[in-house]
Image (cartoon, rainbow over all chains, first blue to last red; front, side, top):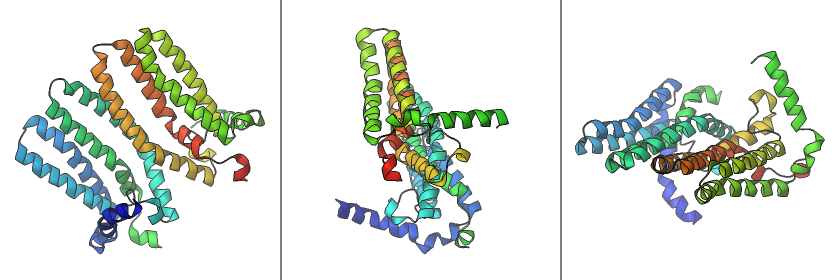
Length: 158
Length: 157
């Protein structure tokens, strides 16, 4: 089981450590990427609600994936890698981010869940897209918190 | 925070860390409290359906609050104290507890709120009961995590 997980996760580990993301290790850029991620996650249900255009939704889904990969790369996959792949400082940073994100995630989860439940009776497609957007937001909140707090990589090395 | 507020937290902190609560701090006792808490909280909605009144839910809510308080005391309030009242090890333990609790709470919040919104129109008693269980589970979750994983005080020393 552990080997299967290792094989599945290998490309992600490589991606997180890839030099391709060296250019996005500044705090300002990370914060922009974090904002981009939040907007990308919220755009999917909002566009479906306003236009129900399938092509736009496919493009927005792709856009969300790009935002997720960029955000994960900018924090070197800190919130997704297993603990054994992180040093003590990174574990501290990750756990602190989860604590900061916790109450916001609870409020968003409750409000979003309520909205999904209300919509389910009248419009299941819209409820599905809202649920997807909410889970996207909840999945990314700790990464957003890390991206917001993490210092520039050069400063970190010092 | 005001000086009065600080001294209030400090004296409360000293009170719950006192030796009078040492009986609650053993790992076995803590784990029994965690299991009891889950049982009581999860039983609130079925009991509300069965009895059809808010009274039973309120009674069970009171019991779950008492167990929650006992758990908070058992882990010396680590999950809820501000940073300034914790040492470095306690800070690490607290943040790790929030890390472990994050996904459990996020999923519980979305699923229960969605369920509650569906139920509310047909059965308000059940809606309240689900809401009460949900709030208890979410607010106490980091403390539950801590209570489960913390070693005995002797092991810590």
